[in-house]
Image (tube, rainbow, N blue to C red):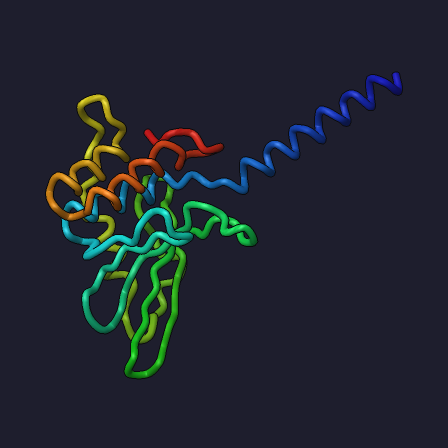
Length: 179
C-alpha cells in the first residue's frame, strides 16, 4: 500500500513538474503569425531580427514611438516576454505599456485601455484586429507562409525572414512547430 501511494505521489509530482515546464514556454505562434502578416501588409514598419531576445514590430516611423514586443526565448534569467504594446514619447520623456492578449475568439485585446503617454492603445489594437492572417499554402504552415510572403514582397531581408522562419519551427507549445 505504501509503495502504491509513493508511486502515485511520484506520478503526480512528475505531472506537476512537466505541466510547469510547459507553462513556462508559451505558445508564441499567434504573435509570430501576426508579425509575419503585419510585415507583409506594412502595418509593421520594420521587424527586429528574430535572433534578438525581444522581437519588435515598429508600428510608427516617427514620434510617438509605438511598437509591439514579445520574447521568443528566455534571456537566461527571465521567461519569454508576452506580447505587449509600448508607447514612448521624447517630448515628455514617457514610456508606458500594456499587455496584448487574444480572447477565445482570437481577437487581440489590450489588458488596459488607459492612455499610454497620451496615446490611445485601442486604435492600435483595432489595427491589429483588422490585419488579415493568411492561411498556410504550398505545404507551408500559416506562420511560415506569412514570413515567406513578407520576404517575397521585399518587406524583410532574407536574413531577418530566415530567423523568423526558424522561429516558426519551434514557436509552439513545448517548442512544437507553429501551425
